Length: 333
Image 1 (cartoon, rainbow, N blue to C red):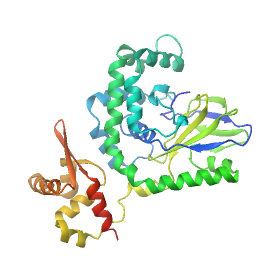
Image 2: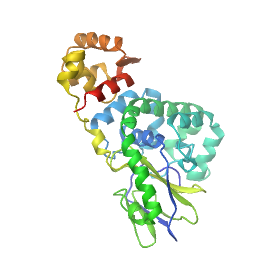
Image 3: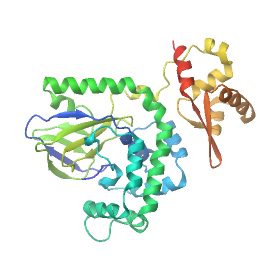
Image 4: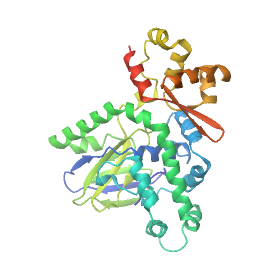
């Protein structure tokens, strides 16, 4: 079974014969995949609408086209090449996954489709991929890169949550209580009499055997769940990291009066509004400020190395710099 990215009414079971060995992988590429499926493939998993729009707007036409095979209702299976480097092998960055996609031979992609769906003609949604596998690989890699440019600031802010989750999994492993942990990490998972039961995935029964279970915390909607059950070395489960809901809301605001004294009230509000990269039009709507005035203030912030600007097609994207993040942290209440 490849990466599971859609939801159906089916159930699947992972039979666990003895106390499983747990480990954890901090691999943000699964976060990028979950957001891609939610925002572009229509598989809503609880991602806030603001982030869905930001992700959807950031991905270019080629990326939108590449995600189409994931948007077909009723299909819970997806080929392994969606996650070319398994998190069972350690922590992998988004850049490493994109490099693996770029190195993947078109023939290997087609063979993976055959392993997933059987020999012969693949399902209709994957036929354009078979016709131009090189084009699809490029489009999918581009989509992941676009999503990551939007998501990376959020991932950086989640460092404490991720560190806490590493500690929680470690304590559970030492104390020998993985059943309680595994049964509580997702509403779509439960620990039954024989092992783990998953809802909304392709129906089937799998044996854990002597494989370990690798947990992969994600920043995704509360209903997101991505599984890898066919890896010969380990089963991996990607799930929303506990406490992620706090990141969707605006963090504790800086002392705006003090920040305003330093950069001016409009620019202070502008920096606070950029919790994720936004287009100039999105930012103008959010701040209720005329585009000409917004351009002036952005020019001043860019001169101070507090924001970056990137043109993509007709849109100009604005993002806070690391220097701005450090400045805001100084003024947190």
